[in-house]
Image 1 (spheres, rainbow, N blue to C red):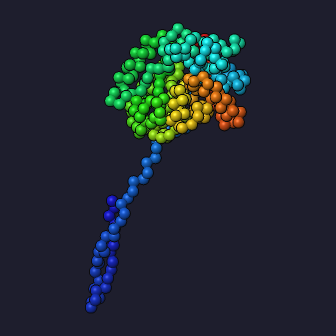
Image 2 (image 1 turned 90 degrees about the horizontal axis):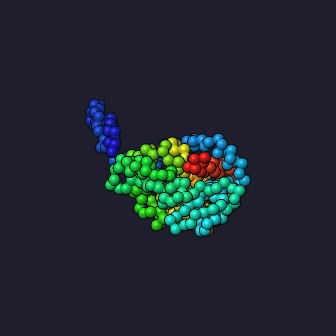
Image 3 (image 1 turned 180 degrees about the vertical axis):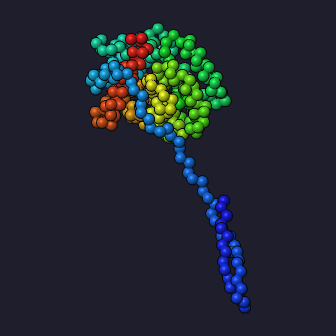
Amino acid sequence: MRVAALIVAAAALAGCGEAEERRAAPRPVAPLQEPPRVRARPAPVATPAVPAAARRAAAALAIEERVARVFLAGVDGPEPVRAWGAVLLEPEDVAVGLADPESAPPLVVATEPRPEAQLLLGPSADVPIGEEPDAVVAALRRELRASAVPLAPGHFPGQGAATQDPLDGPSVVGLPLELLRERDLAPWRAIAGRVPAVVVSSAAFTAFDPVTPAALNPDVVGGLLRGEIGFSGAAVTDDLAGAAAVGATSIGTAAVSALRAGSDLLQVRDPVEAEAAYEAVLAAVRSGEVPAGRLTEAAARVLALASAVSGA
């Protein structure tokens, strides 16, 4: 609190010509208010380039095919409805064939090891409350060495402090950005160059935006994942059913927002919802809401991912 400057007044003394200084009583002043804290955000950065061959292949696709290529869709039978970029097999699902025999085969992603899987979702890179980041890093490195197929760890930027699993309801991580950097980003820095894809969280992070899920937030995907961490692989959303619940919106709207934010592979486990989300993204691309260049970039990353994990 500042003390008001002493006010000195000259006053003539009665009955004499002699003057002397008198101090006026200090004026009360209001306490200084701290300036409002501004949320720290990563500076906008250029997105790392995708392979030129993958970009050319994506650009050559018809717009409908290009949109289908950015989806990781669940299946409800042996043949997917569309030539999705990737199909998700859960333990109870049968092996899948092709929607169109002339189309490139979809990338086969699974939640547990199985013979057809080319990519596994997991393991978790989250740092639980009370656990040290170094322990999580060590466990991740062991799993990367032991896995017979490439892995896509989750849930960037780390939902170990989330209020709940986003698939169970609205989920928020309330840690400040500096603590996220110190604690939760440590595993991602350690493995960023060793995995072809990462799964981005559906939780909202108050360090960026208390209501927008991470996978739908360009500050998280573009600024933090691409810029600060320097990850150049595919950014996969967690199941967009969770993001829709957190953001109180439809899965189609969440899919459009995720693609605009920089996510590349849009995970929708419900096959019916995957169709609805496909139509929403297709309409958004045709209207210009999603720039054609962003769609091509995402499709190119998915094609590059499929090529990398298949050894082509």
